View 1 (cartoon, rainbow, N blue to C red):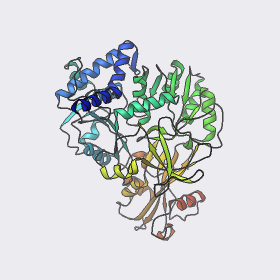
View 2: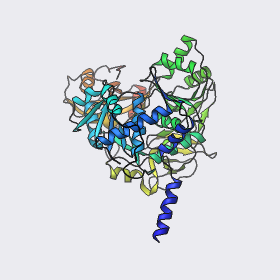
View 3: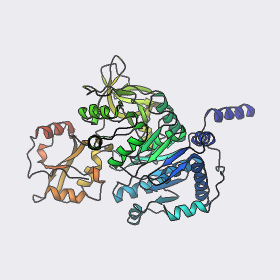
View 4: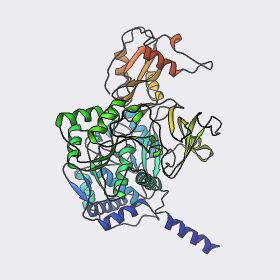
Length: 529
């Protein structure tokens, strides 16, 4: 029996490689190929391997062990990806902090995961000094980081215990229904599976070049960057969105998949037309087509001669469950049916968990190896979302007879603004804490630039309260992109409620569109986060 158990364990290990093994293959095959580069330096696969070995040894010297969390608070930089790889090599978990968050949100996110240490850039380290994060060791990038690596051995270090593909690797934060961010734990298994799906569904080919301009604390950059490295490609790391630099890069490099999100596509179109630059080659582009003006899709695909990805994924799932459809070059779509991604199973279910027939709306439930491993420190919420052995996404779809999927709405109300997810509760919690506000409800409004933006309906208890005061009181308490773009004052009896007292947000959306709600004073317009 013991021999059989041992044999089974050996078979399981052989059948389940870990992420560093995929990178080791690329180091052996292409040691001199560029793995990472930015506008000032490059790093070959051999150099990346040596630097991440040094980083593993340096972190181990500072007490980091298998399963420990390391926090990072930094803009996009080559070292960010070094830390992701080092975490995978030693079985540690990198908690990627969203630097756009307010101080209170950042403190919550750090305390949630109890990191052994935090590594921060000069740009964002001051935020750590303003909060009570409780972390003993803070390391700065640049001099301190490089000195730490220089003093460590470049030799590979065996992990404290054998790596397992189910080892957590990265924590990415998502918006929470209670108003506080949740930490989604993504395993090495999930990252490998996300790479596999990208290969099968045409978002990735060996030796691709990928531009990581979107924040690496988001899955759109981290997932694709790691997948690119696992398949021998090059990742160009950009410090945020710099449209002229991005367009210039397109002229110099052949790109596999180009991430373009709502709110930036019009800027890229303008720069391409202004500069007259022709892209050297883009295979696919875009994401979240539902939130992009349809005419922009036709224009950008024509300019770059590449189809637009009609995607539907999430931090918790990666590109699946429905990111296989492509909108052809030059087409202005009249509908946006999704195609189920490879390597996943999808059901549409009713409130009782029973599968609905074609043509009927149902919540999407997913199974597959790209799934995350639950919300850190939130077993109750994890169990609820994984009920019946399926991950319930909270998104409602209709399946057509041909198998394609039409998006209907969020089961639980969500605002998607420029690639960011915003739950109304996040904003309402802050609004309701302000003096002079008796009630507040946040809804979404369509926006030609960002796709959707939050708008707040406020019942005031202080007649002198002004919209600008409400906005100013929110600043610093929530991330800038979550600030309501309009404050509309209403009476309590103008808030439509169900028989159980719940606000009917969709009726408020309709009233907002028709501008039928009376206002105590003019709304604040075009408030930038």
